[in-house]
Image 1 (cartoon, rainbow, N blue to C red):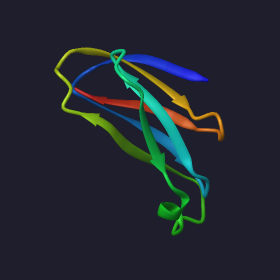
Image 2: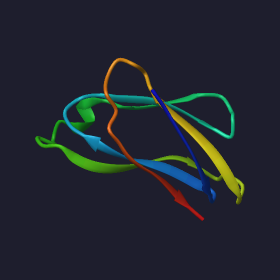
Image 3: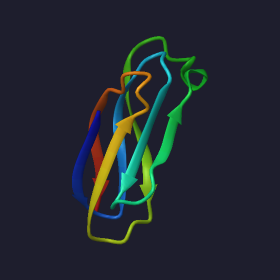
Length: 87
């Protein structure tokens, strides 16, 4: 599925529930091209438990209101806890 939302600021990221599984999602800001974000399980090998982690996806946006769309690659469940933004 796809999640969309609006925010005001010049940065956005996501808060994800991580486990030992790979995470791959795609995102688009303001109707732009889809970009892929991946966290490989090899980067999580030291984590033996589920945890919440913040990831920065896009910085340097013009100040103002933006729209973001986020979707999974369809192969795994992505547990999105929040969309983070900074003004």
